[in-house]
Image (tube, rainbow, N blue to C red; front, top):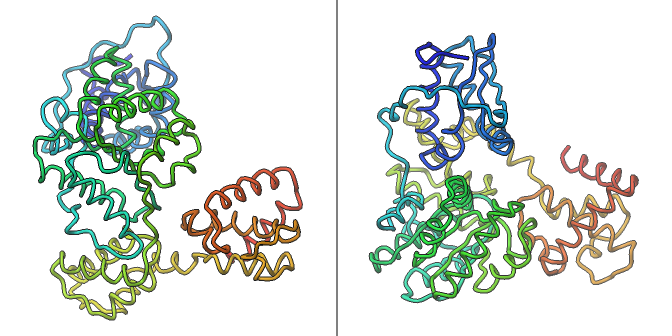
Length: 459
C-alpha cells in the first residue's frame, strides 16, 4: 500500500485533477472519483474500483488516458491495472484533498436553464444558431421543423425527432433550437444534454440513492432535448427511466426534442415501446449534403473566418470532400491555418498538399452505383434488376447483397439507399441487411461472394 505522503500519491492527485478538467464534474464524480490508488508494482500502478461494472466502464473509456497522463508525469509508469475491491475490504486511507483543476473553466453548463436544473444540461455553443446554419435541399425540412418548435409557445410536434449521419448538423440544430427558445422566452426551463450524460446522471442518482430528486428535476423542465439517443441502446435501466421521463413530460404538455443517427424504427437495441413513442411526433431526416450546399457551407465558413478563399479552392473542396459537414469545415480550417503559419497564399496546390490524407480517404469511398455494378458483374444479373420489382430469388438475393454492401461501405442513410434501388422503403433495406447478415453466417458460399465483391470495391 502507498502512504499518503509518497511521490506516487502526489502524482495520482495530479492525474485526477487533469482527468476532472478534461471530462467535467459529472463524469468525473460518477466514474473516476471512486477510484483509489492501491500500490505501485514495479512499473505498474494498481488502482481499485468498487464494482465490476465500474471497472469495465473505466477500462473501456478512461484507462488509456490515465496511463498516458501518468506516463507524462512519471515515465517509469508503463501500465495501469484496475482491480475490483474485494467485498468488505476497506478502501485505502483517504488521500489528501484534491486540488481544483488549475486554470480550467468549470464543467460547461446549459445557459438556457435556471437554478438546480443548470446542473443537468451541457453548455450551448454560441456558434450554433439558426443564423449560422446553411440551409439547402437536404436539410430544409428539418430546419423548418426545428424553427417551428423553437418559436412555438406550446409543443408543435411532440417529440421532434431529428436523424441523419455523422456531421450533417443534428447537434447544430439542437443548439439552435435551445438558443431561439431562450431568446423568445427566457423564463422557459430548457435542458439540452447528450443521452450519455442522461445515463451518467441516472447512474449517479442510483449510487447516491436519490432517484426521486433526479426524476423531479428532469420532469420539471419545459423543454427536454436529448442528443444522440442511440447511445442508450442496450442499457435497460437507463431506457426504463428515459421511457418514464418521456411519458411524464408528454402528459404535462412539455416539448421534447430528440436526435439520433438513425430513424426510430432502425434504432436496434431500444425497446419497442420507446421506438414507437419516438415516432409519435414529427420525424425529420437530414440528408447528406449536395454539391451546392457544400459550396454554401464553405463560403459561409470563409466569411466567419474573415479569410479570402479563391472560388476555385472552394469548388475543389466541395467536389472532393463529400462525406459530411464536419470533415468539410475541418479541411477548410486546416488550409487556412497552414496558409497563415507558412505564409503561403491559399491555392488548389496548397489544398492538395495539406489535405493529402483526407483526399486519399475520399478517393477510396465507394458509391452505391459502383456497388450495384460490382454485384451485377459478380452474380451475372442485369443492372436494371437492382431497381426492378422482380422477386425471383436469382434477382432478389443479389439485390439484397447490394443493399447490404451499400449499408456497410457507404455513409448513406437507409432511405437514401432505398431510393437508389427503385424507390424502395427504408424498411426493405433494413430487412435486406438483416437477411444477408443471417444468411452469410450460415452459408459459406454467400460469405465468400460478399468478400470477393468487397475486395473488388475496395481495391
